Image (cartoon, rainbow, N blue to C red; front, side, top):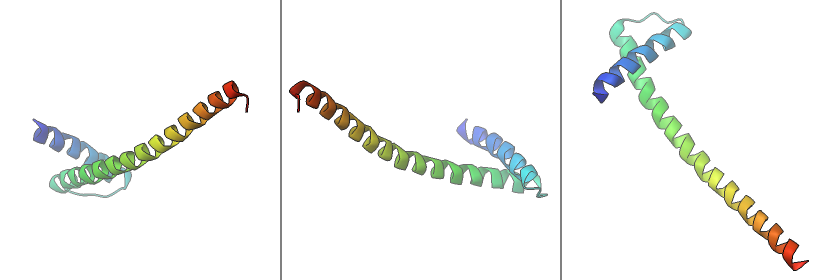
Length: 78
């Protein structure tokens, strides 16, 4: 089922991409471009999400530590 879904999504993505870029291609080339674009875009998006999620984790850790230091400073009076 996932192969059929990939072909359908690839065909739609290829069709939209060729229309946005104003490129005339055949049906097979359109589907091929769509599937290849889906693979490249999916890998790129997955990579970016992993990088930004690691960065978000660092930001969250720093903010959490700052909150704990604020609370500690408030209760100790220093």
